[in-house]
Length: 113
Image (tube, rainbow, N blue to C red; front, side, top):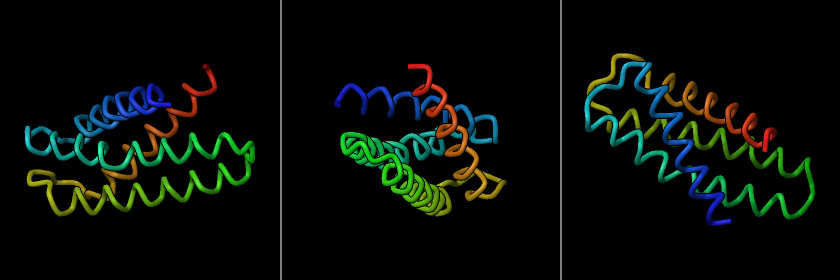
């Protein structure tokens, strides 16, 4: 499970940082904020999701993962709103777009593997 956590965190940071750069995050401190926000949120979601997979209950898994993803969007939005210094777009847009893309790419990667 530890390898899954590490790989997921690495891929999430790469994907969400790429999206953030495309959306206009350029300053070094703002880049650090994006990385730290993902370090704070991703391992919890992946750990809980991996534990839920062991229950073999797809409905419970899907419901809990969706709730956690919504919570992550809100938490990251609040982090971005409070700590990003140079960002002209909405912190909510940054949070929802980067999380939607990383979640979607995670689904694709999991289906390939």
